[in-house]
Image 1: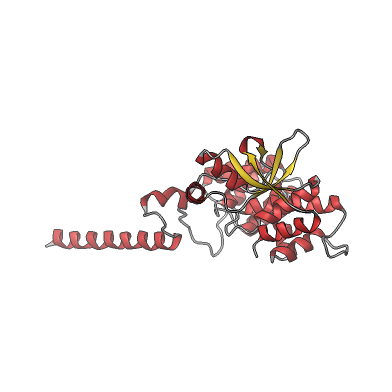
Image 2 (image 1 turned 180 degrees about the vertical axis):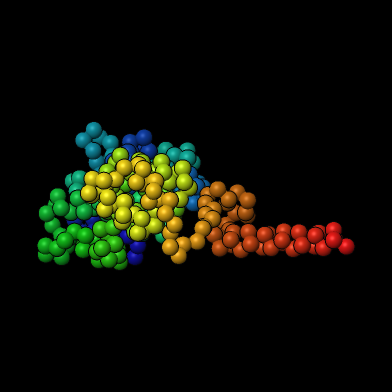
Amino acid sequence: MNNIDMLLDQLIAKEEPTIVQISTDKLHPFPAHPFKVQDDEDMAQLTQSIQSQGVLTPLVIRPLENGEYEVISGHRRLHACKKAGIEMIPAFIYSMDRSEAVVAMVDSNLHREKLLPSEKAFAYKMKMDAMKHQGTSSQLGTKQRTDALIAAQTNESRNQVQRYVRLTNLIPGILKLVDEQRMALTPAVEISYLTEEEQYDLLETMECEDRTPSLSQAQELKRLSQDGLLDIDRTFDILRQPKGNQQDKLILRIDEIRKYFPSGYSALQMSQEIFRLLEDNRSRTIRQRDRDER
């Protein structure tokens, strides 16, 4: 049973569901929805599926005071319908308050196979705040730490949930580096304790030097910040220090190189093909050099 089915079961237990056909013009995204809706290959496939088969899983929405509706679950399906020119979409309507809606929205999206660190960060933060506002710890009926409850529900450790939530204190430019796997999670958590101005200084230095801080460097930046001693010159000096036991890395973003490969190629297949082509080129170069030397 996936998260959407579990969500529906929980909502059905509270009230009898109403499924209706709703105009897409009356549906609004959930405010501060942390899960990105992107026009990528997956979206193209979803749009094609909806065009041929329709919407197989109704959206979950809640009524607003103005006669329109807020989407709880189904933002990608709604976007695909709009791309496909579909004006009416099936949806379950449930009445719920803001805190209930936040918890339901987060839970219905955590089933995705690929979640960015930023998506987890803001989703966990929103759910923690909503659960604290509810003053309840879920259906267990016992008071527990909200981070411990989320950890149990997501198979993350409580410390890992806390780390993700800390990422919400990063400026967008640094958080993007984490999403792109150009900065590791643990150093990013340390960087999250820097002030906004200090983070912008760090981002400028990273872009200038084309490098990101190691864990030990991030910890030193955090220490200086907490002591009120961190400025852009110290940031520059720390980032220029050599990193122990760290080799240079070449990172190729899949969305930038996918156009050079057949549709449906996995990241592993792309990697294997790149190395095969490099090896072929190396062999040709050696053969040409041998011919030139004869």
